[in-house]
Image (cartoon, rainbow, N blue to C red; front, side):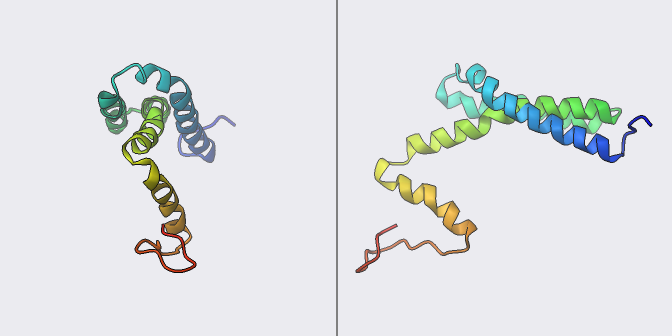
Length: 124
């Protein structure tokens, strides 16, 4: 029986297209967009992927939508690497452990322990 749009197989293909596009975008797109000046990288990556996501609204069928989604994920793939490196460059070296560990503590639902140093407890 052939796959029809709306079946579970098409959903897996859509998710696979997004995953493969994002992975290739991180690997190959970083070298392509990495040639731009640092001030333009994030904006260019977002501007490259946004029209492709917008075209999803006009896709005539699911196959075209899957292709557009893969291309959009490819275009936005380098964003995450560029954003993380930008944060690392902008945050002073002595504050990086706090910035890097606070989201992990928030995910574990532990409140951040920032403030004056107390006896037996390191400053965050």
